[in-house]
Length: 402
Image 1 (cartoon, rainbow, N blue to C red):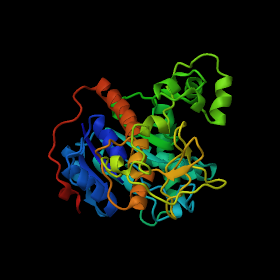
Image 2 (cartoon, rainbow, N blue to C red; image 1 turned 120 degrees about the vertical axis):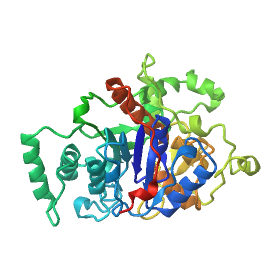
Image 3 (cartoon, helix red, strand yellow; image 1 turned 30 degrees about the vertical axis):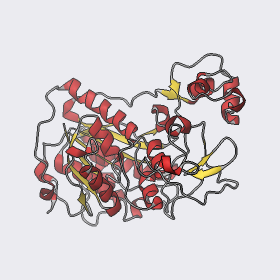
Image 4 (cartoon, one colour; image 1 turned 60 degrees about the vertical axis):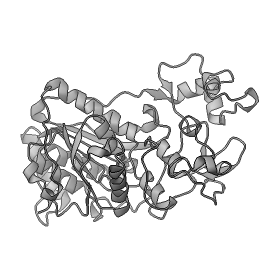
């Protein structure tokens, strides 16, 4: 199956989509550092980037996708989220960084069989409900574009009239928040997903059910729990966080789900870059970053829980979320490699730029495993309807230019 990846960032969602079995015809991203990261991993033949086209670096707005009409199975991406981010200015449709109109335009120009878009949890705030509903209507009826100088609310009214009189072009599920920790990612990271299928395909689909739970982790971390045995933690050092300890006392039997994965699960086999820098140097992007400190509200991620949400931040990377809290009460920053593991990137995937720049790329990324899970389920639904989806196609990035 053939895909197009928009707003690719450092490639987290794109890698997940590729691992699910889609071959990208185009990777579009405006940020130079992110494109450098993708270019280097292509050159290193990091799987699956060895089969990717070179990223198209620049603004999406001048690009024309119309010649690929009918040749694309999936469009995926994360439209820039600053208009909706909890840490942003919350301007929504008034923000010129809002790229949802461009995402809808690509759907209109290519008519893919399906699409996957993700965004920040802030999009689900009550104050954004009108615009969120407007996005949903546009994705259902991409063939009814906004007119020049038309106010978004007037366009929404036209879309509502179309929706009342005609069947949608795409069957789009209501947007849903997925917590990456519920699907085996060692990080509590909530992202909003929009998934739609072209209506003529008749695909019926639901978001995948969670496979992991906090309850299972709390049960596994009881004094004689499997978690400590798996990590060979001595009895006197088995110290679940107060939250995990309290929850574990209330659970009699192990839940049917698997345990949330923790920071220890993700990075426990890596050498500590602070105390074993020579061994740590064997891993790409695994260097000690000094300067971490804790204070109220800035306490880091406990070793024996999933990490807090790694963040990029409009004013730099906030250290509280990107900091490891050891059981002995000491702190240090996560390395780029550790953060990449928390985002489920493979160890041979390298990141361009200084620590703060690489952490910004990671803070904006979709966990690879979460992207793969959603894309795999989308592919399963499409192939169940028609096993002959997709066809080989030469990727010609320059053809996207007007």
